[in-house]
Length: 102
Image (cartoon, rainbow, N blue to C red):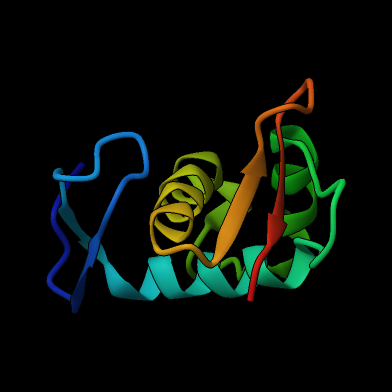
């Protein structure tokens, strides 16, 4: 991924807790807002496909032209928010589902 000249934010990954990376703070923030808008606070939550479909309506074309790279950013933010215990996955659901904790 190309580095931008803008501000950066450190993100975690629930699957690799000791691995952190720096990503574009503006795109992260836009996706975080969109994801938290669409995720319900209670189970059963949304599947990965449902999240992706719903976040697109909340993203600005300036940050994600035509939804470009929205899937990658959604997964990045989802894994970070899981690591920070803001959202949770229901491992018993098939397919997996996510919901908000806070």
